[in-house]
Length: 124
Image 1 (cartoon, one colour):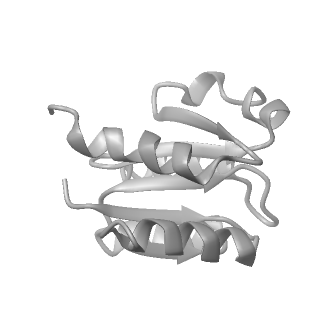
Image 2: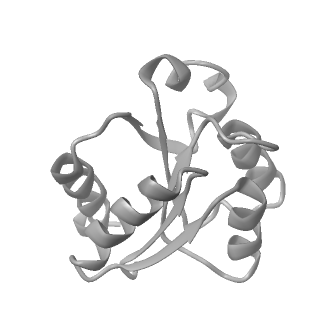
């Protein structure tokens, strides 16, 4: 898998912070502010790690993941959910098989980087 990551979050500060973190480590980084844009990038062929915020306007992260699965766009992608720890436990039972990790805000950027990097070095 190429070192590609997509950050889906409506908070521009989060998008900038995570983009800079992963670009400095040689990742190709895509940032999108909403679930609709995430789906569009997947339809355009994106394959990699997706950091999905749960709480977003219009379409939350759970709904976005459900639509991705229905469209068959989950194949070849690794999903991490990012949000407050109380939100990570909600509405996830039917999606647990697609979510590799939950990352609680606020997060330690070094730990986030290490957690994501592990998925690029694991044997397939």
